[in-house]
Image (cartoon, rainbow, N blue to C red):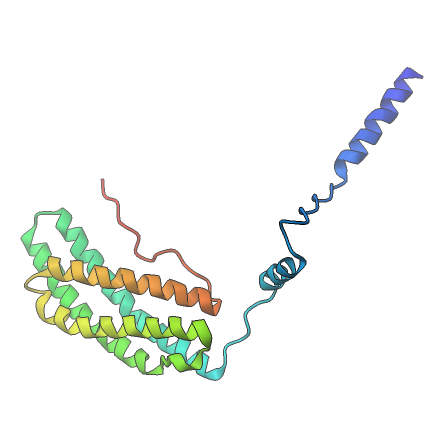
Length: 193
């Protein structure tokens, strides 16, 4: 009899442990019904599909991003050569950066005309305008980069790195505003032993 009582007790305890417990209700003063509803809608509702003009903007950004990737490649090469005291590889990296600045300008110049901030509304338009301003700044600097990177790659790379960091921040803000996935920084600092 005692064994049967212990068995019933263990069975009911195990059955209760398998049932999920409901979450505790929020404190009435801490969450309003409207804010909880808005928060639930914003989590569940995907962003609206882009219009034809917005798709054109994003396609232009995709083309321009190819130029940005070339600039990041050139910067990485100059940075790697700074760790070595090899003047030949530093000059080679400077020449390569100069060439990549020219081809990056071509990609950015091809994609930039499609990037019209007026296709977005409100705060997204402001972020798109900041993005195009940063893009214009990079396009303007690539001429100087192309002309001087061969002779002085380190100062050019330092200035270009500053401009790229501000561009990456603005691009991140724009991607968040549009509802695109935000990637980690595509050029994290390299670690060498």
